[in-house]
Image (tube, rainbow, N blue to C red; front, top):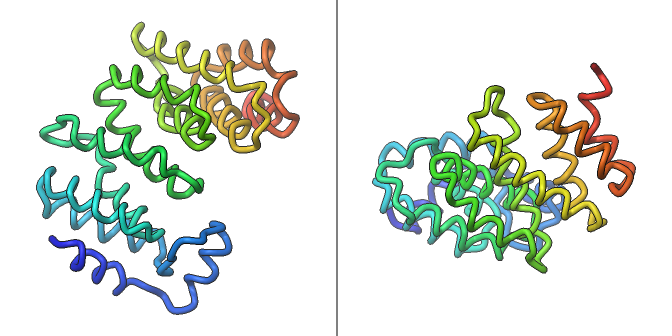
Length: 228
């Protein structure tokens, strides 16, 4: 599939009048077509079935480079799959190359969802993510927590998974003095999701670092703990 064919398929899903709404909601200055997210989901599912891994990586790369809002979402969704065979480094390398371009939560979160699958499949890639935690680029720094959310969700983690969980909690601890709203929100998100599966670690984190978090982040992080 060529880039022109992919963009034509996306344009066929445009809903008149939706682009202005979406651009305002997502605070976008880039081109926004006006396509509902479920429609992009359905289209990219078809592409994932029809295209080889190499073709999907190439198309995702081309879509991302258009800098069109929905094209970047579609690029991310093309690579959002638990198993990619062969899972060489091409998909992961492409996702990593996008991180410095992050500038809005919707695009960043869709790309991180694709990255979550590749990290879960090959946890040694956490070594690369750790470098993001000291970035001067806020969205890169935030991505280190968003892309590692799968480590909040394991009910019966193996020793290696517990070690990774503690490692990422260390990253979160290093963020608590950064009062950027998106960074505080990312810490709260990680601790909140962890509290559903590992409340003891969430409580311990908040006991040690809660007073340093902004009030809204501390409240969000403890939301599920307060219901117990």
